[in-house]
Length: 334
Image (cartoon, rainbow, N blue to C red; front, side, top):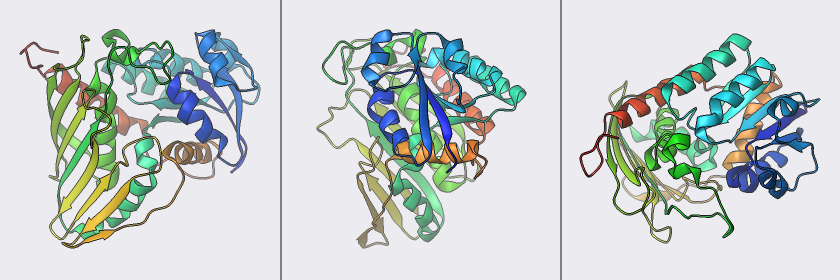
């Protein structure tokens, strides 16, 4: 790949522990700058590049071609609009924003500026999911996709035992709780695997275990344009020691099951049932490395980016509309 100069805006634990290591594995990729409003977060990145709290100065860094945006959801729009105005391509973490209006504004800004905007759905790039996409034709007529993507996230959760700002349970910054954080992966992945996006969606929210004012669990049921049923169970209330990550694609001639693939590493297993089970090998880099390589190739003009921002916006709009009309276990609208 031609050299692409990257900046990271938002230096929390995902950027520190997964995005930065993944980016540094991409041949030709160069980290040129870091930005965060918290100097402590910048220091924890331990990268020998210019780092600062001023967004304009960050975007003016020489050699900056693309920005990975990992700030809280409510700040996505500001960073995307500023980057687009500076002519810099943007890979923005999911969801596109905390609400629909900001997501629409971010996509419009990139479109006006003529810059590439992608959503960082890293699960698209997991090697097991890439292999599963190849297996879908062997399943016959696909009838259903079922996903469980759960974890344990209490209000005082910390990635490393140190003080941590758990903004994912702050409605004003995240836009919700478990559903807005985890469900976007499943909605995107179902469409990527099938080549057929979800176009109808309903949701039930749960506030049962964790002590915070956003949902700690959700069930979502949808249907693709082609008639495949999709159901998602996402939660912040499932202990991590329990089985909690499973993806099933069901067809008339077979079924594919991926276990422990929904995550930041390239691990897990993939099994094809027709009806006897057969372990399916897969190989590749971790999802973050593959994602940065794919987006970087598009920025360099070496390969197309296959996921239009308008498509990601449509899925975001569908999800937010479903959550806005959902009720939690007390019957109070979200």
